[in-house]
Length: 134
Image 1 (cartoon, rainbow, N blue to C red):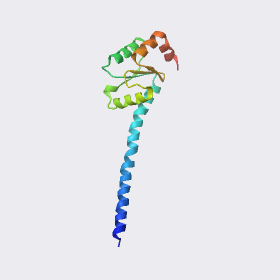
Image 2: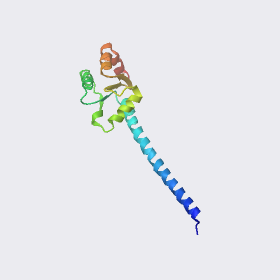
Image 3: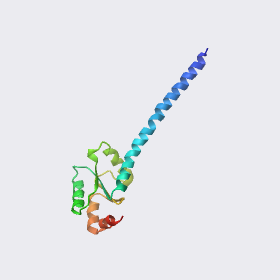
């Protein structure tokens, strides 16, 4: 027969084990969720010639998309207001480029900036240099 002390010790060990499973069991899911948003952002930037992180109603984003259309370029556009993880994507962009604002424009993996930066790059010929790089 098990003593009361041994029974309590087994119960405590079982409780500690359950607590560890609960804590550790949830940790990878949280880490994977955070990593998947970051991975999506990185994949979007480096898998497309032009990537624009945008919001569909933003006038600066609309101007950016119009500029690319006039240049006969079709960017990969991520409309953050149409995604459940849009806010998280903006957090990743903040970590990556120091800005949460939209649009954020990348050409051949290089951060161009926002709408005004794009306009300046078009005017001074820098955008064409970035677009011609493979």
